[in-house]
Length: 509
Image (cartoon, rainbow, N blue to C red; front, side, top):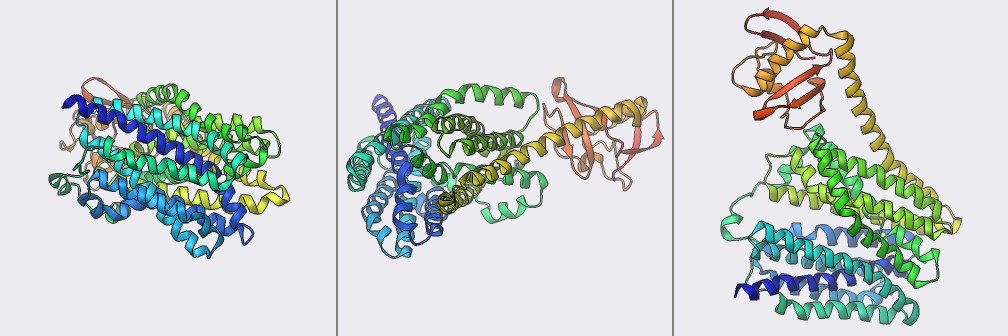
């Protein structure tokens, strides 16, 4: 019985392969088809249509949580496939009729895509309890999904170029129908994503989570970084797809863009993951890496701007650079939001992440679908990509300068502004306060313990910026979770107290 269960779980990868091939094949050409059908009225409609599709495909499951909890993964999957097939059957008619009907049809398509993706992932989590087996299975389905993403655009571009739009849609619909027929064979029946016991846990309000997040500057920074990264991701199947299509008449080269992106992610994920792991060991957090990925996105768009006129090989170079950014950005979104809100229920944070990504990608799809067709007749699309490059590069440069400024402040403090004996005494006070938060060893002028004014300083935080408290503190992790504060900026002033007990008053600016 266990062997049969393992075969069923491994067979889920077949569904992932078919879904990814159909999805990437459809979306590699969808913005092109939509532009040809709708942009005669207005390119704004193209942007709105792509934005609506991205919004519903990324975030619609958040708002139907009660329905999801009451339905099995198989019924959710079949319902999702039903929505996808039905909307695709109506799509060609919808593009030629009232634009509101098109928007509704795309919303239904997005809901179907979201349901299928959510149900398949949830099925793995619900049926495979062992964490190691989960990781192995997710690695397998990720590999097969990337393989489908590499093959899908090549095949779809060839079919579209050689046989036309109608056969293209027939093939895409056929893949989804076959996946729907395969689902009852592959998926175990009567599997629910959330048990009755777990549904009573982690029930805090997502609205409360959002309200609490705006109270912390660190959380806002993480949210903005994730949001901007989502806008960058939204370009791939919107503005970039339109540019790819115009670069060459060869369906192989058109499809090759997406195949290279998928294969580059497969090849680069492992070395990039090792780089991230090494950086986190040295004290960098997930948000700092996401901001670095924004800079890499920006560099890739700057390269892309140089190739959109006629040099398709330059665009391929930019796609490889984008793959590096994707390998950094995608795995760290959840980690970054959990880091800045560790006291929040994981379910709320994951839903919160979906909302940010859904809004960001829909904004990116909207901008790419609207602005690129509008600028192309005048040959001005490179300006759009240069603007996006600045949006990505500027935060990365700013974050790097802040980091350097903090390190300079520490060095400056060591050399001139503070006597070494005072630095040593403050080290003792703050170390004791961090190790024994209830001892009252360090207090501010009003008698409050200094540790209550400090954020949580964790292991391996080599440089922590503490806004409103200390300008910069360098923390070196020692054995048995002991922390030594090695330097403090002159913004901390001391009054001499009892030398024997190291009891000093600390005035915070």
